[in-house]
Image 1 (cartoon, rainbow over the protein chains, first blue to last red):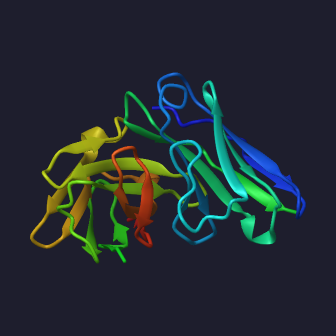
Image 2: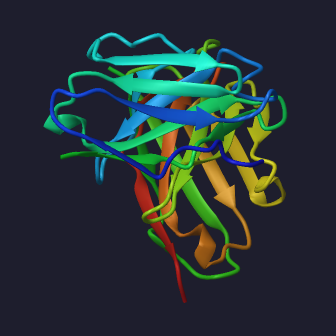
Image 3: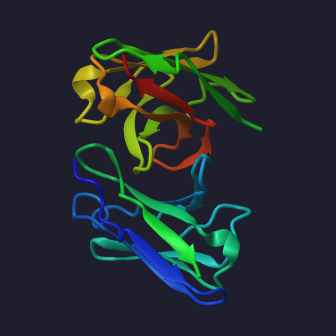
Amino acid sequence: QSALTQPASVSGSPGQSITISCTGTSSDVGGYNYVSWYQQHPGKAPKLMIYEVSNRPSGVSNRFSGSKSGNTASLTISGLQAEDEADYYCSSYTSSSPWVFGGGTKLTVL
Amino acid sequence: QLQLQESGPGLVKPSETLSLTCTVSGGSISSSSYYWGWIRQPPGKGLEWIGSIYYSGSTYYNPSLKSRVTISVDTSKNQFSLKLSSVTAADTAVYYCARTEPTMIVRDWGQGTLVTVSS
């Protein structure tokens, strides 16, 4: 199955807001509210940041938020901090697979 | 606190079978609420779901790997395992085991183990 499409990189300055997009199809992102977002620091296992499009697990900062419009999901990080610099991956339930990840986005905090 | 720990050879020869085991502690692998899965990440690349298993033995595999993958569960040992046959250098990756919710949410990950395919 094809991976979900994410920008390779995004950047922002401390305090700013950034948004990472995750584009799929009606068979995955657009068809189900089962989009998750993961943060991964170098050499570490991924960490769940958002699930079911817009829900935040306990312990995750409210600076992280998720949304979806049509076949595109988005992760927004507000009030950027140096510790947010990491790779971010979206994932979605799919009708065919049943799970697919995005290609990942490297966030640089300038 | 649930913990997952991958174990297995760090070096596998091309054409051979990669075998990994995930030992679960702090929780029962027989829980009806979860699936248990394997996810891999080639060096410098993104995440790829390999497959998942339910405690009853029902399995779901990535279609692109399905012909080479077998995932099994041993409830008596609270473990589940991955076998990937006919490996090539493209299978070199960090392999993670994880506890997965039915909607593919992963809250719990193992630390990951690097498996290199090389002669």
